[in-house]
Amino acid sequence: MTYSPPRILVVDDELGMREGCRRILTEEGFEVETAEDGITGLDLFRDHGGFAVALVDLNMPRMSGLDLIQHMRELDDDIVIFVITAYAAIETAVEATRRGAYGYIPKPFTPDELLLPVRNGLERRTLSIETKRLREERERRLLEVAYERSQSSTIIGCMTDGVLVINRDRQIVLRNAAMIRILPVCVSLTLSSPLEALAWDALRDIIDETLCNGSTPGIASRELVLDKQTYLANISPIFDPSGEVLGAVAVLRDITELKKLETAKSMFVSMVAHELKSPLAAIESQLGILLHGAVEDDPAKSKQLAERSLVRARGLRTMVNDLLNLTAMETGNFTLRRQPLDLRDPLRAAVDAARDRALERNVEVCLKIAPDLDGASVLADKDSMFMVFSNLIDNAVKYTPGPGRVTVTAARHDAVLRVTVQDTGIGMAPDELDNIFDEFFRVKNDYTVHVPGTGLGLSLVKRLVEMHHGHIEVQSERGKGSVFTVSLPVAECGISQ
Amino acid sequence: MSEDPALIMAVDDDADFLDIYRHILQRGGYRVACCATPEEAVAAMEEDPPRLIITDLMMDTLHSGFTFARAIRQDPRYGRIPIIIVTAAGSQRGFDFRPQTGEDLEAMCVDAYFDKPVEPKQLLAKIAELLAVSSREVAT
Image (cartoon, rainbow over all chains, first blue to last red; front, side, top):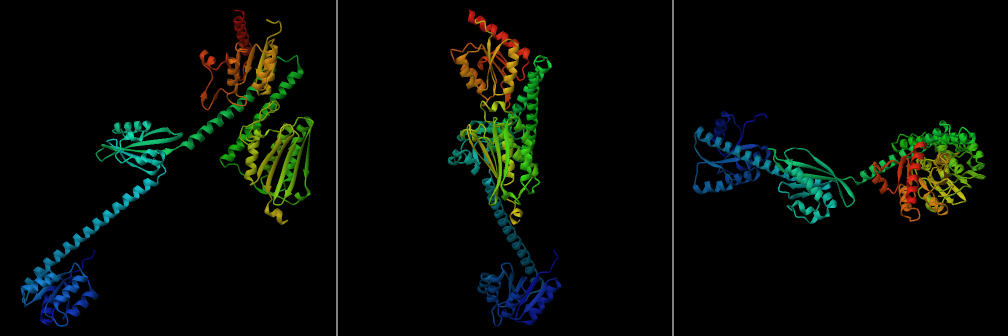
């Protein structure tokens, strides 16, 4: 900060007095302005401002000194005003002080008689300004603290985790809204209720442990179960600066959904393990029988065992592929190269791929494509579409005992392309239809036990169709057969053609 | 005791395993009845009760093998028929339920437990052992 000399205003109708004061004060380093009457003085004071001290004569034309003092005081709390007059009377001095004068300097005065009170006044002014500044700062700080407190309590209140604070006397001193949701009993607790009031022994025990072991800093972390919900409870001690334990803060996070996911994941892994192990065990047994020469005398049986091994090995490979595809979809690594696609291509390819096996089983596969499909395309990934149709057609063939028929149709219905795969196979009962799109679900009956399958095909199909903004539905009747219908939106460019 | 070879019943939802059991057991000199589900097995037993049952564990549900074994044990007509579990489901959800002791087997209502695939020799040896025990029990 650059130093600027204190400014002093001298208001006196006597020119000699004004100039005398100016000379004495200027020599002492003060900056001086003068006025010859009250009105001029007030104007100067008002327009230029920033005066630290005013020396005011009482008897002046136009406006008396007393009135000027009052006006100046109203404009500025801090200015130090001295009355300079030759006609001093005790009443006048009292009145001047009442109106805001700080002191009284009788005329005539020596330079020192002027300078001493001016310096005292300035010092007082500095102190008063500093006091005022400190007071304002303190008030501002108090406001900040109050704001910070309300901010912290708002944040704690809005946290989704339950927060509970306990003092070293094991009394509850804070609990947020989330904690009340977890433990409704909290709402009726008065602060300073004992820990036991929570009626949750497991939580109480960890908090007690934390309060007792406070000297070893660290967080106690444990999973707690309450009303079928699982919570991760993290309890940490609260220390004062000297390291003494003041209490503990417990944060409870609801991890029920995470636990469910964990269970689902481990169930899925066991399921996969079982589905892999069964066909491997079958292959191992079949090869064992073949290798130990147990069927050397029976070539037909040998061939059958070898063929079944091959079927199971192929089934395993398909399952591993399906699993990899499903995993890629879950992790978002399954990339679709979607482009305007004529659905007839993957349909024909899928029908051709299934034809040999169908012939072996005496099942006829026919493809009926409506003429309105000409020029209509879907925005789709070619490989995925092949996977969808070949899975559906393979299933239809697998679950249709010969002689039988699988009919594949494709037609356009306004903005939708509809592909149906219909078979004359074993069909399904209504209750069997509920889960057929779930991973590893397979309908189990006398017929299906002889059909190899992983229970992944249809769930893969459903996901692929949905990734293309389409949907799949199934109609089926036990003993009559099933119809799977895939609907896919027609691509914009197809409509314009 | 009849002079016919002993009838062994195999229950498994995997057709290949039924075929494998049929082969092993016929070679071992037994008659074989194959069933794809516990329900089918219960129906077949009424016609021709077997001397021993081999069953899978995880058929349409995880518990079906256990439930089936318990139902057989608790039925006064079949209570003495030995039961062997042969399964690929050694553990589920991280919980290993392979029996470790005789008490475990008793609690499961079964007489023996094998992981798939089972060695034909081991299976035949266990069958012979269990049949010998049950014959003695019948004789006494």
